[in-house]
Image (cartoon, rainbow, N blue to C red; front, side, top):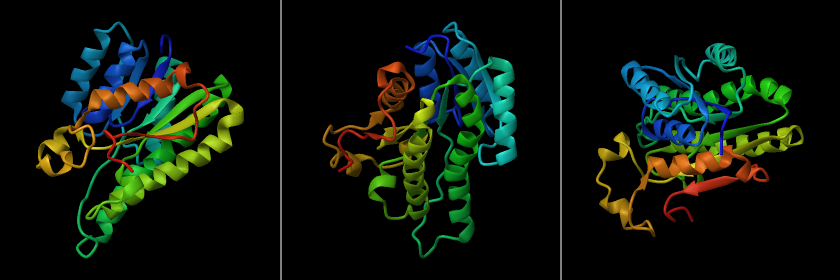
Length: 243
């Protein structure tokens, strides 16, 4: 589905981003991805991806830094020639009730989760316009749709991603550049491994957590020509949790 395409994924050394990288490679895409600190995990992922007979490279870069994002895109274009697909996945949490939330807790989450999406999207626009097409996939969350106590900063950042993506879809549709959102629910990752998930599962119609691979499958669909008439949409991968 993605043969001879190049995907750039932010924050892909672990979790959902890692699974998206693997699913993209399985579909034939060459994979460039950024990481901020987990160099050992990033190198291990490169090795795994290259075993699938695709080109893969990791870049240490902070997606929330505008200049770093510009440098990253330039380096990927130098190494891969094109960026056909962008997956904005980088994100953090700083969960606290609003009464206890510090200003820096708010700023860090908005900066990392939302500004990073602007930074990378801005940088790939001209290359994608020159190529006369592209697919941008932004990773939000069901929390950005429904909210969650103790996550006002995270919910705001993820809701912002949805509004941003709908705007980009309208701006760039005439240039054959699509922009869509994936909103995962409770997915089996290192983050959810620390939680008591029984309370969440009872509210999920499919009665289980999702897998990062299942998020990756939807990303492959949105990256491919199978979704060529899909733009400005938010797809919840949540087992029916999102109302």
